Length: 233
Image (cartoon, rainbow, N blue to C red; front, side, top):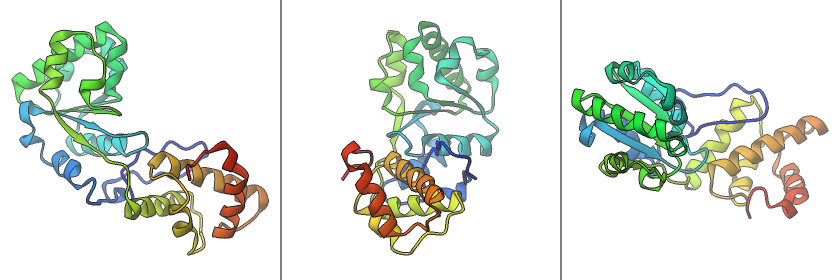
């Protein structure tokens, strides 16, 4: 069990990033079902969007691995071999909103969309915002993106947040007290980014103080950080 997430951590950890490590909950079941059925995507393309650390890259990489997809970042489209990408069995573009910063990348994405659509071949794009908010200047690309299906990864509910915290501690091979996860759920933002930040922080402090991670220990650390507002309240 675990999350929808793109786990960017500042300490070396074993990151569980397979399909079995994605926690399926009511608020993300529909996007996952859409990813599993690219043949149903209107015009053969989909934008998967959600907040920071919501699992976009995790899911995009699972999808790409399962389909032998070519993958790249949106900013890399400006120098990409578009003809080769058009001919690939599948294409996955992470941080796709990066095309907005580069006119050449926008033109490349426009041609890629047209080529993939003509072949009836799938194109998956992941971004923090729906494509209507990317701010692309190329009118033809804007119209293509407007017609692209969108799948949103929502912020986690309590069940998903608990599963995410369990995963993050397990990825760091940390044995935590049974009271810790319920304690944290009631004291951090309902966001993947907050969960990632607090686990990294507690791990550092536990190592430095040679302490076991318990709710009491976490309370001491969160109290020290309260003025900074790192994790919400």
